[in-house]
Image (tube, rainbow, N blue to C red; front, side):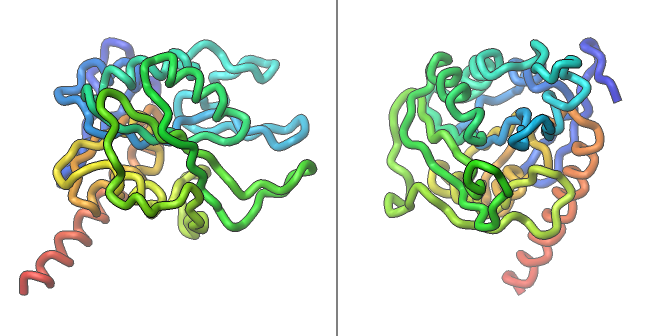
Length: 248
């Protein structure tokens, strides 16, 4: 499904989460509220170590690359970072995930946009990906802030967090809810608004929902949007059922 620039985005709201279907760069400036926290896994090209390449879904999907495999000027890191910076409150934290090939470009772009670097974190996927130059089991996360720096809720948290990949996943690059939830719990309060401009499988939104935070996400791809909506609906029903059991 191709979104028209003049077409109003489709919006799905359930519980404390809202998901927009459309281009994040167009939607972010019009969001009704600025976010307290950014937790996102932006889409980027994945190289396999040879001539083959995998491409993440969303704004960097395969149809947005030219014949030579180069990224077309859609939303590079440097164009992505300023609108995201503006969509967050004056005092806000941010967690931006990327692999080893993209973390440096992401770092430069987000700092140029006004963010400051707290730390470089990593997610240990435990099961490595085969590679001719050391097998890869890590993905990285920029822990950033703007305005006033805030101490995380659990200062004993370590940089590395070991969590297996989700066994039952519908998105190729789906992140564990536990990973996103760790960031959310450490850098926000109950009721705060969490932003994910590249929602994908909605792991960030699910983590926010489970932790009592509000969340807003944007997803460009109709397929992932529909599946993410279904996931949020299932999650909300489970949380409502559990709440009734606790009250009873």
